[in-house]
Image 1 (cartoon, one colour):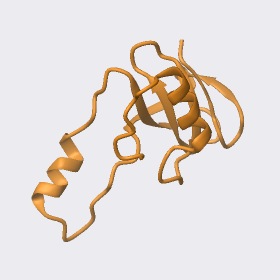
Image 2 (image 1 turned 90 degrees about the vertical axis):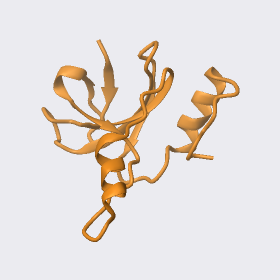
Image 3 (image 1 turned 45 degrees about the vertical axis):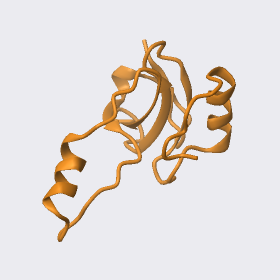
Image 4 (image 1 turned 180 degrees about the vertical axis):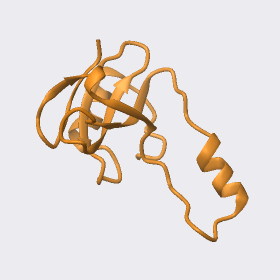
Length: 109
């Protein structure tokens, strides 16, 4: 069972109390965007084997959205953080780097 800590209310919740919302840190497009930009936003998602950043909602608790860093192969959770942040916090990056030497940060350099 996957257990995540809500960074807002501090509850350690099982995945049954949460709702997965997909990939975190997506650039959203508004009116006036090109069709290509919107198509990319809607249909193109990362599906890595390894560390992944996801958006979750504490649906059976405080109801707030947050992000989680976890490994898709082992289900190891590296940490959770506010959905308001534009990139993962340094402490989470350090945990991932310690466990996964040489892992590429992609957009989060």
